[in-house]
Length: 529
Ligand code: G4P
Image 1: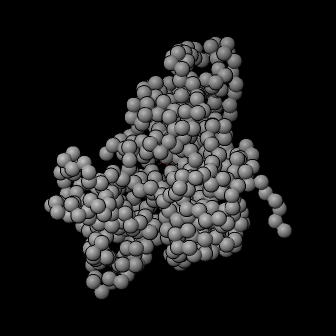
Image 2: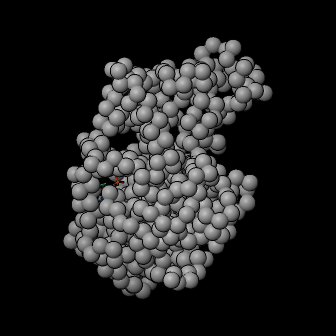
Image 3: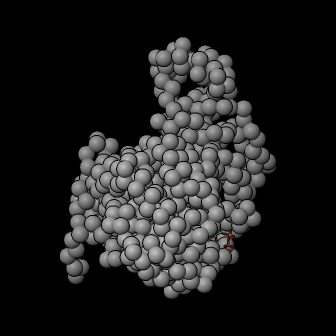
């Protein structure tokens, strides 16, 4: 007999978040330190070890290792302060921004990690801006303060100007980058002094130091820190929960993932400020109450990393109700039942059967053939959530099988990799799979596509650049007119949306001003490109 569980109480304990950063800003290190501070690992070093093991059991990850980049996303679940964290990993490389974007659809808040020495880097700016336009609550972490870097006041300006988020520092550093001693908690004026541990392998001791003692012991560093705080007080840069939840302001923490300075405070910020799961809006704009029967949506589909088991894993975020393994659920798009007997947690390649899950949790469905990104799964009354939004492609290519005898394999790979979102496959409505156009955020996506077509589907392909500069969403009414203009191609996306590709960006701009009645919507509304 299953015990009665209060779904609302379980949901209230969940914090489902992602860390986004530019590669090398410290996302992996911070993730590991979160596990250390949550007690999930005893000593730092495990995340890298896990990465190595994962590499050993996969072949297409080979590419990932050769290039020293992270392509696949995993989900970590760990308890902290009587809460349950679901930390969704995101690839840092800009070419995989679309993957990150899908993850953003499945989280309730984001931690934005900036390298103090570098500030906001142009390649990841768009992703940060997207958080802003989607009104996701963002907590900011200025990392690597243990070494030489920029003035934090300057970084605050950058966050405000480039992303449009009003920064509200919660902690303020004592000591300059490179000589980092501790932080002042601006909410109560406490000074927390940190001590380094060898290689940051264990928790950094924290000491609460009185103002008098700080003034005596920290000298000028203390004075400078107080001046900074005075300035922030004067402009009223204090944490403001409503505007944080509305994605307008961002609490800022200063620290160093490597030496563990400030890591605990950042975890506490997630518990104290980040929101628990809230009712998800369905396609009609109605919120599905958290304690309604089970519903979830698929935000990621991924081939198995293990070449001996070529199955597919669909990752779904639970939005309402209790999930129980083996329960009957329906896919809204197809109306068909979906098997949940082999539901797993999604800790990298190490699968563990999952028995129950609650709103905010991520479940992995093994061999979920027929599941696509954006699908809604439900039990009880039917529900349909809006699809997962697409990121704006910037590069385009043609794809053909090298060996025409492998056309069947090529087609199979094409549709499967499209469903996984490895690239966007755009097809001519009249020509089906012949001569598709691939659309991606960056070239690395094409490389992954070609590598997987060859190694998993046995269909080596020739990928060549296609001369398009811009893409817009359009509709049936506008298509007739667009077809009569040169330099434009009309294609269909896997989800059925019509898109127009333009050989010349300038002509697109002119067309939009000359014929404003045409439907030519940008794919990422509200973000400049
Ligand atoms: P990423 O996942 O965002 O790509 O970054 P990752 O954590 O892998 O960190 C990139 C590099 O930055 C690593 O150094 C890491 O040790 C270093 N790093 C992370 N946080 C801090 C910090 O707070 N302070 C300092 N000084 N360095 C930090 P690496 O030399 O590339 O790798 P490793 O040899 O240390 O493993």
